[in-house]
Image (cartoon, rainbow over all chains, first blue to last red; front, top):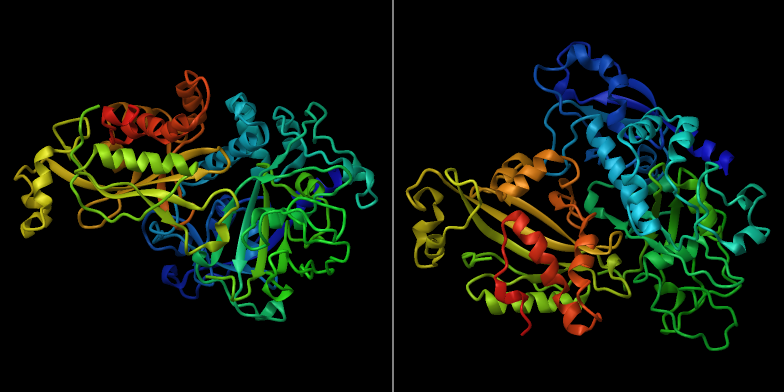
Amino acid sequence: MKEAQEFVWMGAIPLQIHLHESEVTTVPPPPPALILAPRIGYLPLLLPLIKPYFSSTLPPGVDTVWFEYKGLPLKWYIPTGVLFDLLCAEPERPWNLTIHFRGYPSHLLIPCEGEDSVKWNFINSLKEADYIINGNCKNVMHMSQSDQLELWNSVVNANLEAFIRSSSKLKSGTIEDDYASKSSLSSQKSQKMIGEADTSVQTKTGKVPVRLYVWNVSEDFGDMEDAPPIDSWDRISYVNRPLEIHREEGKCFTLHDAIKTLLPELFGKKRKPSEGENDEQSFGSEEETKNNRMTEEGEGNISQPLETGSTADDDPEIKLLRIQGIEPKLETPISWVANHLRHPENFLHVCVYIKVPSAKSL
Amino acid sequence: AGNFQFPEIGSLHLIRCYPPASAQAFAEKWKLNNPAYPPWTWVKSLEVPIFATNQVEEGYLSLENVCIVKSNDDEVASCVEGEASLYDKEDEESTDSATLSGNDNVQPYYFDFHIIYSASFRVPVLYFRAYCSDGRSLGLNEIESVLPANSAKVLLESKWTFITQEEHPYLNRPWCKLHPCGSSDWMKLLFQAVEKVDRPAMELYLVSWFSVVGPVIGLGIPIQMLKEP
């Protein structure tokens, strides 16, 4: 578990940050800032590193900082790594962003008053995750102000050791999955389904805090390079809904099952008893048979006809699924994914590109 | 609770909320008891069909263009009864807020309210936004000045945990949100007297919820709404 956590915490995106031309008052214009941004961090937290590059060239006025990628104002409360995974179909290294110090688009973005805004957004998300997992916010509410601050600072500094120390006071629990721990699919390490710190509680959580970012791609494209750019947040469907895991004896609730559960309208009707196709029944996947295999890239093609009589052509196609910059196989147990790839606030952020056949999209 | 005389303006779409029966009942009771007011309606998230779940038709209750008038002399937000006539269709001049009452102290603000179910907290959550008659959005500070005195005080003391500016779950725009963290506790308190959760109790769910939440943002509920039909 620790190894995967380290991997996640050390993940970083190289950024090349350009000052917007309207705010450049010097000739020649300043060179872009090159910053390595932690995946689990947030863009406004980088300001102390970025500002020195541009402070001498800014026009007079008060700073209201915001970032933009290809014209799209970036939502500052979405972790940097998630923004990158979502907006760069073909990963761009370094990632070229534009920074603005003036003209905050307050009709589009909620206000950001520096680190405090980001901190409170984080703490509120932590509470939300706490509520989803435990049915109440007590764990977070009972943390002292200084403990909360310590936890927050560990995130700001991407300091995993400090985070583990601080979060020991938070009984986040883990998702248990008997199937995954017994099966050969899981690695040695993942069999230790114990929380990060020694004092954490082993709770049987049936609900996983998930934030799903779905891009419904209407046109087909072969390479990610050809993917059309996202020019508006209205193109992204944001699903902030807990994932309910229904564990069944001997069955593995996979990542693919999770996506189908979170987007039931796209992936078939409510479960009906299957008629002798096979004896297995797992939640939300009555149409799945053992023939349903995913490709390396995680493209999911539900090749079995649904009971409703629709054919494979009607089914949505998962063109891309990214979590923490990786594309896990869709048959990975969701418990492993959630326990190892979650963010510090205990949410699993998943970026999905889906192609919905025209018959289904409205 | 008093009667708030909301003028009859505003567009409404028909909406169901979770639980569906509760939203229906709420909208019906409101309409029944507030005949002069716009009814709550249900907005389907048609633009994002991706969201329709098996259990709940995604959408939210909407009440828009509610006029709340605040007099600078008066600390408590109120809606002046006499204003209702100003929105008669025959009276074209009423659109100019400056001629509203000849009183410079009176500022009309318009509120949109959306009640959206939070899957995380399993309670309805109130989102709202406010704007002036010229369409300019109000900041949190200005909204605070319109709230009933008690709320303003609470808001001041716990800036980050009571009313926050957050993104509307569907509309990709900043709205104000009343925090749901305490909601389930209130609801438990309200329902602990109910011996069994039966149909009338469920239907009253949203009415009860709103009776607690509404006054915070200056929307009262006529007492008749809380009674059994």
